[in-house]
Length: 227
Image (cartoon, rainbow, N blue to C red; front, top):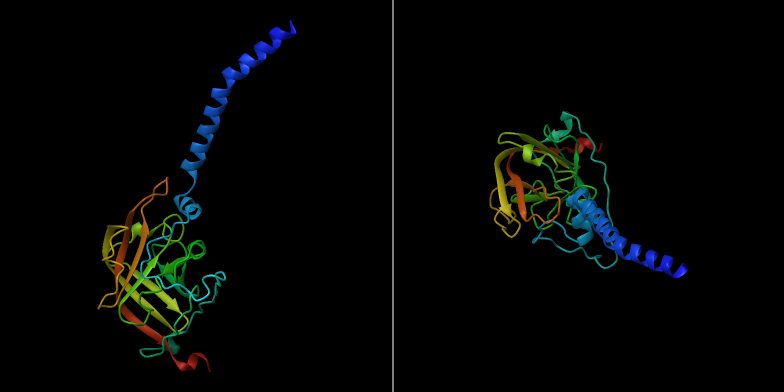
C-alpha cells in the first residue's frame, strides 16, 4: 500500500512539474513586459548614443556628481554680454523648461547611466550654452523627455544656467536611427538638439525622435548680480 502511495505521489509530481515551470516562465515574461524600457536599458548597461562623449579624468575612480542650484535672476541683472562658465563632467549646469514639459528638466554635462537617472545629459563634445554650435541633449523617454514628442514647430524652450538665460524656438521635428549621426554632430550654426528613443516595452528600440531648436535670445547675468 505504501509503495502504491509513493508511486502515485511521484506520478503527480511528474505531471505537475511542466505546469509549474510554465507558470514561472509566464510570470517572468509578464515582469519583463511591464518593466519600463529605460530600466531594462540600465540593467543591460545601455545608454543613449553619445559618440562625442569625452571621458572624465576620474572615470576609473567613480562618478562625482556636482549638483548646483540654478537661481532665478531679476530682469535688471540681465545683459546682452557676459562670460560663459564651463561645466565639469557630471555637473548640473542648466535647467530646461517649456510649456509642454510637466517639470523642469535638469541638464548634466556628459553622459553616464547614473546621470540619465536624475536628469537629461548633454554630450560633452557638443557646444556649451553661449558658444556657437550644436548643443546636443538626450534623456529617457519614460522620465524627463516623456513629453518630447508633443513639441511642435514654434514652441519656446528656455534654458537657464548660472551665467545666463538662453531662449530657443523649435525649428523642426526629427526622427532617425541611433546609428545616424547627422543630427548630433557639430554644426556651424547655433542650435540645440533634443532627442530620446521611441517607446518600446522590450527596451531595444533603435529609433530616435527629437527636435532641432534655433537660438532666438541670449541674456547673460551682469556683474551686478554678485554685488
